[in-house]
Length: 252
Image 1 (cartoon, rainbow, N blue to C red):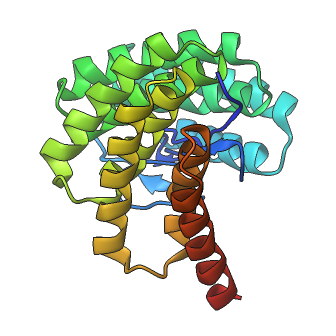
Image 2 (cartoon, rainbow, N blue to C red; image 1 turned 180 degrees about the vertical axis):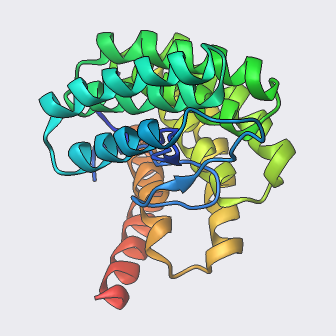
């Protein structure tokens, strides 16, 4: 499978939610590298002491202080379980925060079980159709992609896609990002026809939402150019590359 540049979405209190194929961040409420607001539970949470630890984990991770973030993240997880119970959404938040640290350190085998537990908690706390569940599904899919296990990642991405389409609508930008990411997996498995359809659908949604000159189209356009080259469609690849160059020049 080709090398993949994966942008992660992690569900936390505020969710983090070129030639190498580009996967994109997805989340609820925002895109790009900014935190994404989590939908908070109505019942009592883990408390202010936990919130301070949670905020510290986010800050430490953003600063690249991963070893310290792991220590504080474990404290936050333990406190959330003690204060709110093992099935409260704040526990899922703490699990995701800790898993994010391991993911940033590329310790995906450590991140994986934490994301699996977070998914279970979110499903219990919110129900299986909630957007926080979609975020957890996406997190797991990203990790499986990093572990080069596309057959494990694909059904998770597809489940997340169904939830995003249901909750946000089929023309939402997060749907476009998931379509792009699913296409990357299909291309890596040499299912070029399916990958092309998904890339084109993703691009159409982005163009409709953003216009045809937005930089956020470039990742999918580059992926399409790569696919066209692989399938010996040099003219279409060149056309896509020219469009990318025009967008980048106009954005300078």
